[in-house]
Length: 304
Image (cartoon, rainbow, N blue to C red):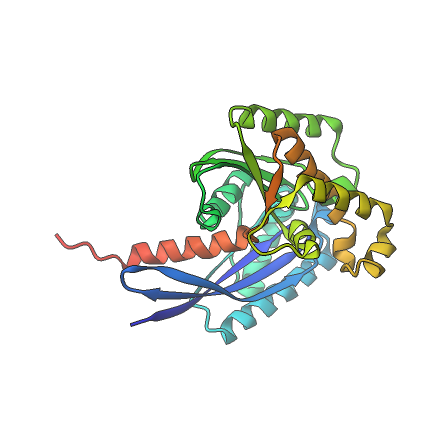
């Protein structure tokens, strides 16, 4: 007999806020099937406020509040059983992050967890990432956000080391990333990947998903360093408006995709990776998997 439930994950990022609703199908004796049912993305750039002024503006707070109310209604109509909302870099650094969190809880009923970069990497690592790739090789996982990038080294399907750097697309656009940050990332990647004879990248985030979609590569196949390098050159050859019109990009994607591509390319260069896989797994997927694991643990009855 099948047991079917829906879980929700709210990812409050620097560049956008997302709601993922997933259907979890459980059958005794076999692993659950987790299927993405609905994904809603709202381009509220909290990072622009925080990185320039140190706090979230009143106008963006109102947009955020309205988005949370909308997400709450969507989850209600989907009969979502459990959900979790996690905020990353922008709300971590906002002076009024905690007060915003309290106001959102009071006005919408949604309790936001402001998580660290380490927690973010751990949640992402809880996904079935390695099972999707079905290999014991070494990988450098690179999750590029608006405010930070999380790096994780995997080997034999085990997490070896993780670190979060304040190297994000919105920060770069605002010219708030100095050479010292790039140097620190370079040193960390080289140090933690040098002992692997062969390593590949795993790219996560909306920008690499967009690049992968444009490549029209078959699902599961990696992009090469050469392809990404040539596409990066193409992106840079267009200005912002040309990327929107000629490349048919969304306005909130057309600017951040350039620094994102640079981060992925640099990571491939410093780790000597020739390929980058794009399984389209991120924080929202990790939240769903964490919710399922917590519920599964509660459902286990211990008999003495």
